[in-house]
Length: 212
DNA sequence: TAGGCCATCTGGTCCT
DNA sequence: AGGACCAGATGGCCTA
Image (tube, rainbow, N blue to C red):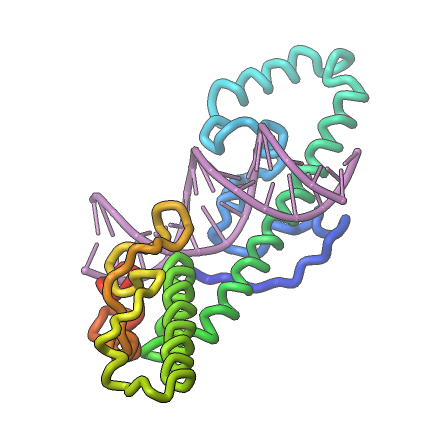
């Protein structure tokens, strides 16, 4: 997959050659974007066959006077322009979203370094990572706030975390909220969290047996 | 070859 | 009215 990153400009220039970004763009593989855009409700495959034939017949039959009215052409053109602009905006939006995901990947520890988490893995791992960090802070606070508490007694206290990060299913996968129910969590759990594990792509990859 | 992941297009809906 | 956001559809690439 070759993705050429291109800065998009917003307005009219985008209408000229916006599709030349990704070689595998379905739109680019079509012989004519115009045809796709002129039949917006159809899937790409529906462009071929009956509808097209009908169209060509119609244009032959009424080649001279009764073609699409002038205003009809204008409406089509306006619709087409709007669609192309909307496509460009949507593409930009997704690129921004992907940039944000890349930024997120950069601050997440992965092993090996060049392992790239998928989108869903990135989100899930970030979720667990944040939880683990906050849990670490919480335990540290416990230690320093209560001098009488020895570190050894901490492991016995079995703090109740809000997430089961070590499980193979997402604690929030049901509806996106944290589940109060949780397994035992201790400093050793958190330390386990940081231990590299043998996984195909990354020791922290969710959905591959580590967490979420 | 099937399945996973991804980019893109598209129409609908909501918001400003 | 136009833009942002969303979800479904589609097709390409990659890997087991």
